[in-house]
Image (tube, rainbow, N blue to C red; front, side, top):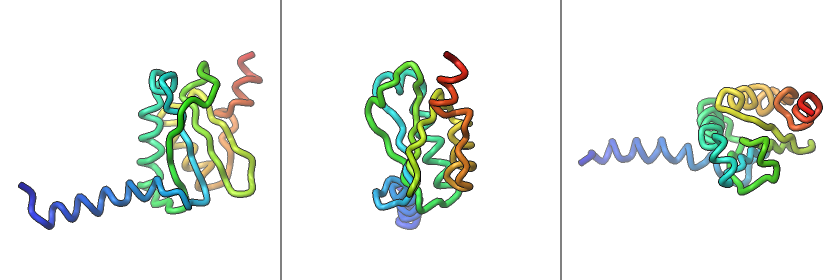
Length: 125
């Protein structure tokens, strides 16, 4: 049995993780978590986004999941929505790429072009 202090500490820690999924944030990351995405490795990608956003204390970013994004051959897929900008679709993601997207795109505003669907399609056609 845990003490009340230990339980309160756990509650506070987990509350920060729940806040990452709030819907009023300015920036959004949506990870495709349909069967195809999960089979391709989307779970660690989603977790990497959640962890990196929490580690950096980015209160203006929400990380969520969705079903099929529609391009199964390019899974895992993550879409980034920034205020006043077009959606950016990142493909063939992994945990390390997710961390880079947080650092470069969400924090500094620079799209990681080599991970985008347009770049992939142009260079792997």
